[in-house]
Image 1 (cartoon, rainbow, N blue to C red):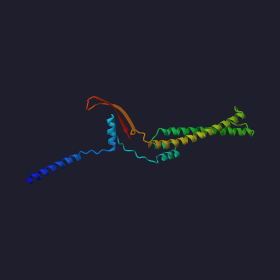
Image 2 (image 1 turned 90 degrees about the horizontal axis):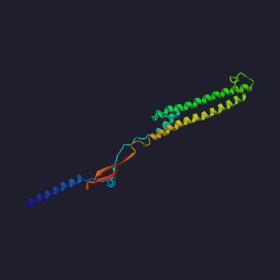
Image 3 (image 1 turned 180 degrees about the vertical axis):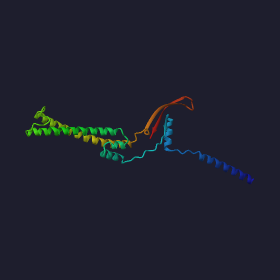
Image 4 (image 1 turned 120 degrees about the vertical axis):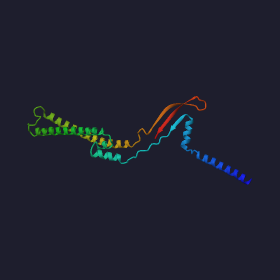
Length: 206
């Protein structure tokens, strides 16, 4: 009788242990994210979590790009891999330098001729078709244009540095497809009634 009772107790204990192990293995750990996902799912919204590895940020990149463009215009754009911007920087600065040089040369020609006229000479290159007053006006106009193009060239040079710096900042700002959202309608059957359920699927990518 004692043996029979012992077998029954052992059988019940083993059964209880097996059931406990099964329950332990089937436990689902709930997290706050799961609770939120389940709550919005009941309202007809599907939330899909997407985990994307973040790109490493180099805090010195903007300073490097600006320094490179300050040393050699367009080099910062090449450093940022915006190769098409380098010829634009070269073209703008080259255009400014060319116009400055041309107007400076003309200014010196008109000034030299005007000074010789005032000194009593009449052998300058403009003697045949330019009067003294016309020569003075041409000298002042060339000087004014030269100064304007000098400022413009400095502006193009500064713009080249600023563009490289800002571009390097924007390259490290998360504006890729990895940061986006997508909303689309969906239709599925209700598991209880069999009637169609209408809803909206919201996909958020970080």
